[in-house]
Length: 115
Length: 183
Image (tube, rainbow over all chains, first blue to last red; front, side, top):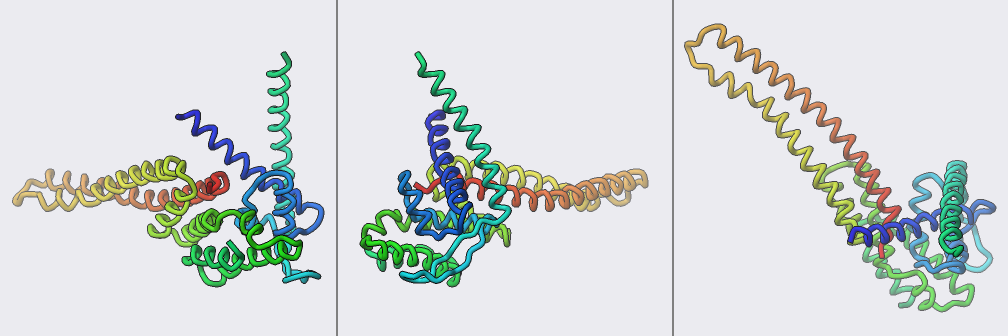
């Protein structure tokens, strides 16, 4: 039972943390709007796209993003997200942690399966 | 589910939020639908890829309630924040309610001690039988002063400790929301 709980937590923690990092990275080069973010992420892995917006909202409140409205050629004005300096620092930190983590996992896989 | 059904359901689920904030959130989804339609998807497809309004609303409400509790840490607001966070996943019964009950228990015990120390002098002084000898009266008065002083200090300490604990606990709730996904 205890082990099962652990697995569930790692899974959800994994998903949410990764989603946060993806959103940060996707706004690093140019400002992005919600739909574009949702699309780009769901091309790579399965998420409920609707949960991106609460995430963006929370990250904006935490000061990682600034938002502004901009007219679009086809449709309503879009809410754009711009990465702040604070957001960029946070992203760099997350990527660093992610690299250490994924390298560790890669090593474990390589060592465990080398026969 | 089409766009209007999706938006109506989400709006109903966000009833407890202030109007302007709710409209702001709904606008995000409205925009999402319009962008999706513009790129050739139909409303049912878009709604399906968004996920259920319940899941979305739970997450929004949890963040909102925690922010409210941080703004005004009344018992009601804290309770709402806890309930909203618990609703994110069954697992939070353990991770939120557990620590909360433990903390509340300790706080309650310490406040009781402080109150007892403050109240004790009343009993001690009222209990002095007249006529009493001087040393007995003085000893009662000194004990009362020590008890009252300790009680007041503990009480004041507890009030700021409580404030700090609430702050940390809300931080924990926020951290928890970031980790637990409402599915």
